[in-house]
Length: 165
Image (cartoon, rainbow, N blue to C red; front, side, top):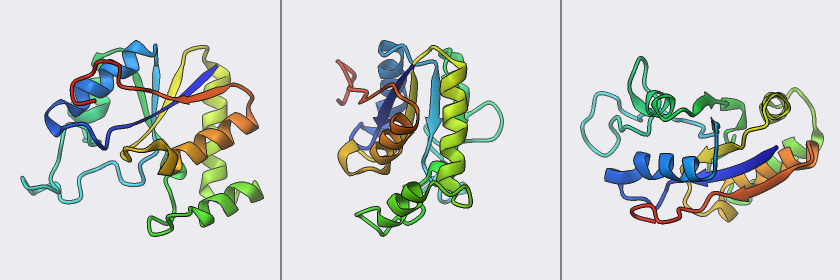
C-alpha cells in the first residue's frame, strides 16, 4: 500500500488538470481521494475567477471525476477529511480531532473510510488538496495520520516534467 499526496496550487489553470493526471499516472495512482473541503465552484453561474473549472467536482460527465475516470483513475470525495477550520493555520482543531480518535469527529470517520480503501487495494492511492505546499496543507496531516493508523508509506507526488511544475 502506498499513500501519496498531491496539490495543484501552483500549476497554471490551463494545464492544471492534465498536469495532475500526468503526475498521478507516472506514480501509478489508481485512486484519487479529494480532501478539499469545497471541491465545487464557489459560484457555478459565474464565468469569472470563482466559476466552474475542469478540476472542480461537477454533476454528470464533466469535471475532475469524469477526466480521472477517462484516465483510468477512480475518484472519491471524502468531505470528512477536509480541514474543519480554514482560518486555523496551525491546524489545531484538526490535530485535536485526530488525536482524540473519537468517531464523533468527521476526520476520524474519514480516516476509517480511507483505511478501508487502502486495505482493499494494492494500487497507490493519492489524497489531493488545492494547496501548493504539502508541508503547510492539511493533506500532510491527514496522510501522516493515515500512515500512523495503517502502516505504509506516504510521500508527495512531484510534478516530474509536467507543464507548469
